[in-house]
Amino acid sequence: QVQLVESGGDSVQTGGSLRLSCATSGQTYKTYKYYCLAWFRQAPGKEREAVAAGYTGGGTISVADSVKGRFTVDEDNAKNSLYLQMNNLKPEDTAMYFCAADLMVRPRCSWSPDDYNYWGQGTQVTVSS
Picture 1 (cartoon, rainbow, N blue to C red):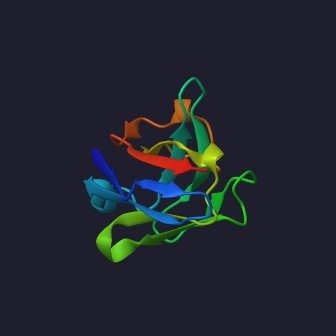
Picture 2: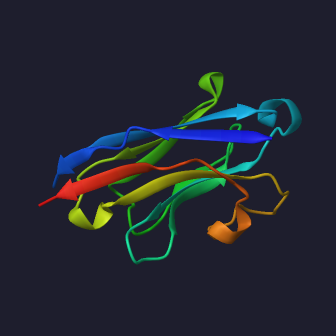
């Protein structure tokens, strides 16, 4: 029902910036007016963690406290796309970044990867010191 394709990952030096894109397709906008979209990241040997989550389709998408002040998220409904702007990147931001969608109706969007049932293939971000 939902296809997600991430892009924009790259190798940058500390302090650099990247803008990740998540293109969505499928029956989403025909069937679901509002649904949860999130950005997750997973570094080798670590658990997958959410860096941003919220309702798309005009809802509020928030970033995690751990990246607040450096990462921002925005969406372009006309392009069915979600973006993650990452500034002042640090080596600890190195990870595979995933876009995920949750079509369940919830009071608020989950920050747990277990609640997301649609995932993109991921895009690699590598930050060198």
